[in-house]
Length: 373
Image 1 (tube, rainbow, N blue to C red):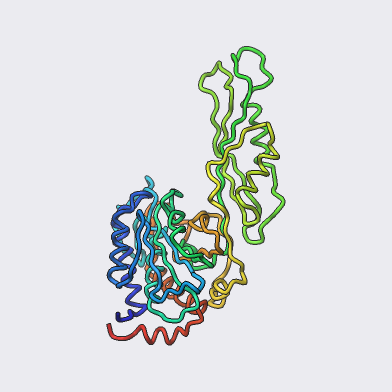
Image 2 (cartoon, one colour):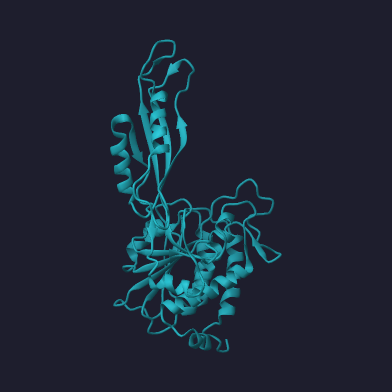
C-alpha cells in the first residue's frame, strides 16, 4: 500500500464529509452513512468490523501487549430545525464554509479522525495501539451506539472523542442526570379546604433544586448545576390533582458519579417527593492535565477548558479528551456549517498531537507519506 500524503488524505476527507452531508443519518437511521464509512476503509485497504451502524478498525500492527488509544466520533445527526433556509442535505461550499446538516456536529471531526487514523495505520512499533470507532446513536444516547461496541474492544487506556472544540483541549465534560420527581398531595374538589395540595407542596421542592449547593466544586467544570425544566399537574379546574410531576436536568461535574448525586438528592429530599432517574450511564468524564496526550496538545499552543455539553465520552471509563475542528455553538443550529480550513487544520493538528504523544518523528513520517502515489 502506498502511503498517502496529509494533503491527499485531507482532501479525501472533505469529499467524504460532503457525501455524509448528502446522506440523511438521523440517530438509529445511519445505515447509508455506515456504507460511506465502509467505502473509506475499503478504499484504503483497512480491515474493519461492523455491528449495527457502528464501524471500527485497528492499526495494522496491533499488539495485545501494548496499551490502546481510542479515536471516536459519530456519524448520526439530529433532525434539522425549522430555521433552515438551505437544503440541510445539500453540501454547499461558499466563502470558505461547507454548509449542511452534521457538517459541524460531528462530520468534520469524524472525517478528520478517519484521515488521521489512516495516516498512522501502517506505522510500525508504535507504543500504543490505535482503534477508531465511527459510532451511531450519539445524538439520542441510544443503546446501539459506542456503548454497545465497548465490549468488543480491548481495554482502553485513553481516548480522543471528536466533537467541535475549535481544536482546543476539553479535558473535562459534565455528565447528565435527568430526574422525574413526583410530589404527592391529597386529591379533592377545589371548592373544599385542603392543606395538602400537591402543586403547593411542589414549590418547596422546586426551591430546593434551585437553592441546593453541592459541596465539591470542580477545578475545570465548576459547580454542579440543577434546573427544573418541566412541571405537569392537573387536568380540570375544579379538581385538586393527587400529584405534581417535575422534570429536572442535572449537570454533573467530575467530582461526583451520577449514582452519588442521586443518593445525595434522595437523602436531602427524603419522603417529600419520589425521585426517579431516567438513566445513570451519562457520567462526567475527564483527563488529567498532566496526561501526555494533553501535554502534547499544550506544547502545540492548544488551551484547556471544561465542556458543559455531553458526548460519547459519557460512556467511557478511561481518561478521555474531547477535541475536534468546528465550533460547538454551531451544532444543531439552522444552516449549520464548518469552515474548510478548520478541517485542514484539524487533520494537521490531530497528526501533530498524536505524533508527539506517540513519540514519532513527524518529519520521518511525512517523508514516508510523500512517496509517489
